[in-house]
Length: 222
Image (cartoon, rainbow, N blue to C red; front, side, top):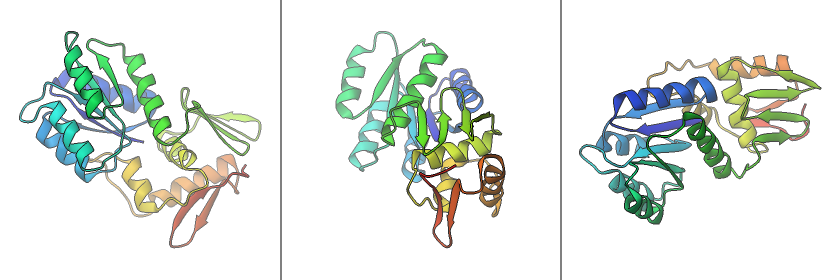
């Protein structure tokens, strides 16, 4: 899963990004002003946007208005000052999905992010069930073959993304866009390496390869 943070308070943005990467295994991009944030939102397939409202150059509500007017449907969580009730109402009317008032608890932010992303994939249950496979998105624990598995970060990120879209064919390009942030190096065969490792750990029938199309997490596995 890949998240965009648009926040001009550098320390806060850094802390949010660190928590999202370490506690939830998300890929994260950060923009410090509305103009850059809107450009990133327009050019990348984010699973969630965390949007501060008081931004330089373009106000957060104008960023939100532009995102929604262009038909972009990714969830948007707005951050607002304690006295920003009017902005919260305007944000919800413009199409935001949730909000948090500063200062906030980081654990609550993470829980809201996970819930918004799951709902956007029509997966409201925090434990994703795909056949005999269970992916606990709260604990980042995978259960397969009667055993719990703690996967390396990138393997977990790939499996969670495929589990969100279980039964669908997911292209390699789509996977790369959601696994990595803007600055990450992407190698041509990295997805094949992760898929091979997941098959060894969790079962050879877990992920089906459709030549020339992509990968599918199959409902009957493992």
